[in-house]
Image 1: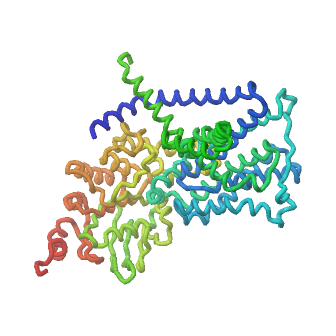
Image 2: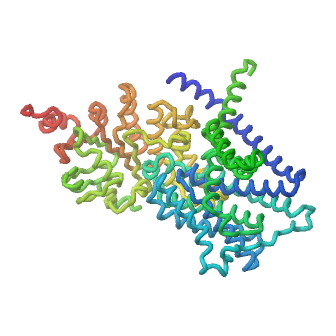
Image 3: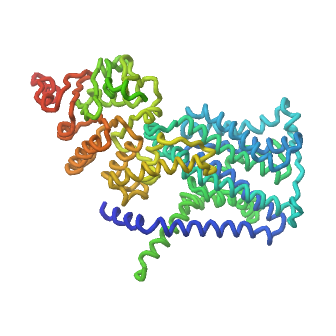
Length: 340
Length: 263
């Protein structure tokens, strides 16, 4: 007991200042690298990086729900689909500029998520996972319904025209969309970080850690859990809208259950509850299947599976846990040096 | 809130409440009052109905009949999450920490009902959010100093010593800004010295912060040491009510605790 107290006293005294600084520097470096990358890469790779950012946004949304609020979802692909279709329909049928489809997709998905969250309040853990799984499975079928075919284009889907860089900027379409996505992603990340460190975010985490105590502190659990579903779905929906614009195409079979599983895998690999992990998760979703395929085309699925198993064994708490361990290790080394 | 009008009422009035689970009467016509600024100890042998009563007060159970009045108004229509805003705070029998949050953030959650924000202004850091944070941080800083938690304030709850956690949860309950503080077996798991300290803390909270306390507790020394009034339950009924000295010499109470010698 006394040993633990002592060590925690040391971290209490030394940590906040240095860790805070290191964390900010790491963030700045990551953003600079992300901003510089498309200047050196071929268009197809830029496209892949854009998809990485898009999945990162979707996973960030899922992380707010699962990591911060403790609710499971195996159905976020459905919200991604709703966002993608909202963008596609608004652009092609209503002639809305692509930039405006993002807030629209965000609002539509917030409402969908909030409404889905209300009945889901009765469900916990694996039962909630099952209900959201149902949502994911139903979504492609739903999008094929003939009643809504005039808007959704049925099985054919909708083809979207790719936007050019505005203001005569000397950027290719792919480069422009990459930067557009990057800016949107950074704004959403900023929003998520603010949310988590605010009164609402603490209420979400309190519900995750102890719903009974949260209620006694005046937190309206039902309201906050539904809101968490809404906000999470809005993030994922905005990602879906970006995905539609970047891929220039939406069709029911792009949004099968596998998309939901991919987002869930990205969440776990990145680290549940660690917001920057979304980027790692996005990279995993986009690049690891490629790596697996590159390794052996016939056994791509098996290689992917093995990579996943190895990762979970080596870093059971995802990239977030690994980063924390490394940071703690470096922190201890710095402190144990006699000259400091 | 018209203070003058509500002053004639006791802060808390339990009016003839009964709770039945299936055919079993867990509480049977309990009534008592708790005046402002008093410390009331609620005791009784295991299974006497203390926890049931406590759960009625924190709105986890609704009594089958009877009423509970806080400042003269019934609380039985209120959701459990809306007890904090009228000034009822509580601690939990076993720890109920937000274990992955820091001590400071735990206390901040306690102050949840002291400010209003929405997710949009929180996410966008609008002035509304910054005002709320300022207000909450003011409350929290004062409580961290009051309960001497500054050395652990930024550490996560998980892994802190038991006594510290208990103090942090007390701070969290105080952050609600309670007029009435419900303490559910706060001495559980504490050693002799810590219980002495707890007793002094309960009295200090009452004196400095005008908090009225309802204490459910097994530990006799603590209850008899701090309470102004003691209510004894046995088999769902109130068998005695009075000052500590009177209760300790009551025949019914002694029989409830020691048996009547005929079994």
